[in-house]
Structures are given as structure tokens and as C-alpha cells.
Length: 193
Image (cartoon, rainbow, N blue to C red; front, side):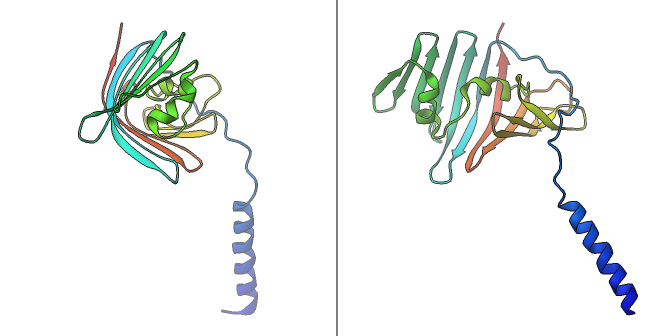
């Protein structure tokens, strides 16, 4: 290869590399199918959570309404590990060994239940793929459903939906924030009327 051709090739490759390193503006919300969130639902599934040091997994039963949340975490063998009930009056955590803890706010108790911190006020939106105000839809799937969402520092990826219809509920959700990871596989999701 002659010298001038090599110099032109190096210059072209170099400019492509520099162009790829340019600072990109933040992504705007991607147009997506509007999804209405159910005010109340029951969810059965499996959860795995880790924070880089600790990891836990098991079953999850969750009943959500505007005035109450009740989470029950089960061991992989199906025994109740802990139950957290949250109402406007406060939160109560009951563990398998009979310990009861109470707090004014369930946010402080959720890490004791799941093993990691998570935004309590966002979880009900996450499991419905219905981005709450302030969240950004970063990408959508082929039928316009959220595929990747940014919410309060978390990245939520919808790896699988129940079926191919635009209104289908999520089946698998992967959420990350730094070293913290939560994977939720939803086996059954039922809106309550």
C-alpha cells in the first residue's frame, strides 16, 4: 500500500473514532404507546436482587392499592421469609423468626424485605410498564411498548412481555442502579377493580 493511501486511511479511521467519542445530548423521550396504570393489582412472581455484596432470590406476592401495599417474600422452597404491609398510617415488617418492626415509612423497611433499596413509589409503575411523571422512555419495542426507561437514576429494561399485543403486561423486568440489580419475573398479574 503506498504511503499516501495509508495516510488517507489512517485519517479517515481517526476522524470516525473521534466522531464516535463526541458528547451526545441527553436522549429525549421516545414516542411510545400510552399505557394506563391500574390503581390496584395483585402480582405473583419471582425476584432476584443484589447490590454487589449481597444477593437474594425467591418468590414475591404483592397486593397493591391506593391505600395499602402488602409484599410477601418467599424462600426458593416456598416458605414465607418476610411480609411488609404499608398503609398511610405506617409500615409493619414481620419476619419468619417472628420479629416485628414498625416504621412510619415503608421506604426505610423495603431494603430489609428485598435486600436492596428500591424506589417504593416507582415500583407500581415499573411492573405495569407505565412510566410515571419524570421518567424517560429511552427506547421502545416493535409495537411501541417501553423497552428501556430511566427513572430516578434507575434503568428499567423490559426484557419480555406476556405476548406481542401492545397492551400486554410485562413478563420480565431488569432494573439497575449502579451495582444494585433487581430482576422480576411476573408469573401472574391481575388488575383489581
